[in-house]
Amino acid sequence: MDDNPIKSAEEQQDEFIYRIEALKKPKEDVPEIINYLIAAREINASDIYFSVDECPVLKRNSKFHKLLESPFYRAEEVKRLIYDILKKDEIKKFEKDLDLELVYVSDLTGSIRINLYHTQEGIGAACRLIPREIPTFKDLGPTDSLEKIASLNDGFVIITGEARSGKSTTLASIIEHININKKKFIITIEDIIEFHHNNQSSLIDQRQVGIHTRDFATAINAAIRSKADVIVLTDIKNREALDLAMNAAESGTLVIGVMRTFGGSGEAIFRMLNFYTDEYQKYARYQLSRVLRSIIWQHLLPLKNYEGTVPAMEILHNTKKISELIRTNQLDKINREVGKGGALGMQTMEQSFEFLKTVHQLEENVSLAFKYGKFLLALL
Image (tube, rainbow, N blue to C red):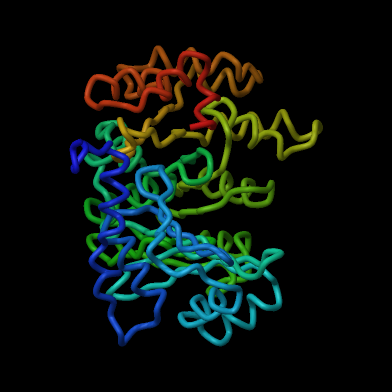
């Protein structure tokens, strides 16, 4: 009998994870959790989770891996792990609000977005590793279309998709492209600052809601008064923010916003218009049709054997025809126009998928999702 049977790729991957150097030789002069964050970086994990009565769990290439050689932490031990890297005011806020979102930054770990919450058993933490370097348009894919968006001088651009679809990364890439290649005054208004931009050809001021400003509306008004060339909003989720964004775009500012949606360009437009009551619908459609420049809807597709992900993007650039469809509330026809706009740099999600199939080996269930409808992408 063979003493060294051939192991599956998954078994080999698990063994690789168990051999993480950061856990074999932990640093003793840092909080214990730091070694786990370093370990996650070491194997290019996207997330690491801490739960009561469980060992830490890594998410790598869309698959979960339990660090079975690590301790199973009890409630007080999980609390100690997390509190070791929190500031006193953060602990106080967490214990008051019961939830807390923050970014932890150090040279050893890079930037880590941490979501803390209370559960029936105790404290839980979901930690997302933010890339150390901002990707370029070449890294993301549709270079010409993204450059077209970054070259805009005014108007309204929306980046949309589900949670953890790479929206923040694409936004950071666009901002950095403008920063390097244009001479602009950029103000970002962020729910939480993930990517830090150093001034290049442009001047960038980054503001975090709750720390540097009271709320999005106050910050947008301040940015307009400051005569910013570019205003960036990481979360458009109500009529007030949308009103201010469109008014700023109408006055000659480039406004780039992020909004969470389930579907594509048409659904993003529908959701924005749905902020308005019937009596304001006509004007809202008219204003949006005038100021809208582009929409990016994206989804991260898993590569074969879950060896990574690649962003699929639906890209709309506003045209006279699409503007007319918005004004007349014929949103169901927008996808067809996007599909016909290849010469203008547009592509549907299906067209993006078909192209990605030619340059990447995708996981099989991706093809299945597209076969039965793009909204099944949510199940991946």
